[in-house]
Length: 231
Length: 406
Image (cartoon, rainbow over the protein chains, first blue to last red):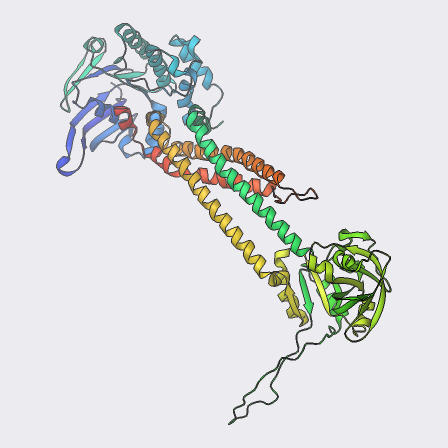
């Protein structure tokens, strides 16, 4: 098998100092592969979110080694990590987190602008194309706040994919959606995974969602308890 | 448009009530600054203009006669001396033509005029009045004090035995252009002059005492044949006057006094007025800055989620900082535009309230482009500086935390 897209080796993460120090992750070894569609499950407080933030380069490990796309990302500066996030990672959050001041289209254009420093030709076209693929071509000039929960989450998917990332990290993407809408959102991610070969790691509580993924990683008490692949 | 600009403008625009209120706050602040500066500058300009309407910028005279003890103390002697100041007589400036040319050659000097001045009496019928006789070269003198503009009747012509008198003297003696008046000096010389014009220099005392005659006539009356008593100088920059006076004094060996020295009280008054106005402006600026800072700090807290998202999707710390700095600068600039309107409106309204009988404003206001540019620059800079703390806070936001708990 080719080099893993992202690999964690003996990664530990603790918060606080001295007596108040609590270790949340106790040595994680994990490899995520290109084009994979994986689920990360576990009870609350198990360290899922912490792991996700380490994978998303939003936080730094206390110990251990993390490589992403063949680079040791722990040794990068904050700005270099920001660039890495911008170009190679996509995020989808539970509470969609669109910028309410902007329209759906602008929300998708923003990450491209944030990296280039200004709007460049082709950015809007890319955003329009993505929005039409998620079935929102008729709502793209609506304010983010004028969209339904499901629509907002679809815009968030489009935004996460704007820069053609290698890996999309989704934190409870269907958590606050009804079952029907949640299913649509899930299918959308699945489709992007198939068509664009983008890797996805989805953090979820939902067992039914997890079983539809190619791989299920379960984390309990800061350790990987189960890691199984399905065909 | 740069990314930071797009986000900053959108954040401000969507801030609505908050943005409008802080803009009004900045506007009122800048308005006060503009109004106060316009009023005080206008007032000071007009005060100085009025003062210098009847005064040369620098006046050169012979130094006073020095006083020396007759006997000097020897080795074992102690001399007690009582020095008595001699009465200063009217003396001519030595080689005054040369000195005049020297003064005129100074690059900071725009005009020079010789003057013969001394005390005299004006007589008409049984009445007599003490006057200040001023012998001038009309062409040169008009560059120092614009007498032609102040004539209320007659013409600005002086030759032979012609004279110009002030409006008060004219009234007291019942004189008008074409009448004659006798001028006598304490030395016993006397001459009859034809009145060619009556002036009003805006000062009652001077209108009563000043009598202008040709330089030659004054020399004869004051027994100063071929000499002059002073040289009056006009300088390019009025606040350079003291400096120029010292330089001219050094070069010519004459006693040189500037209008600034002769009007110390006025200058102290003007300076303390300026100082208090600066104090007020500084406090207004501080208040405006605090307002901008607090609004932006609140906005950073309100937008912490969005800032977290922007960072998560790759926005660097530098860009996040610049978004908020820009917000501060935009608020300052836009607020100052509003403030210029408020301040100018207030100043013009104020000026229109109080008018002199001749229609000119009692409170002249000086609304200059420099004042506008300075206020806008100050407000923008203050906005930028006021945004430093909020911007730093925004930059330090930890995206992981915001996303987890947001």
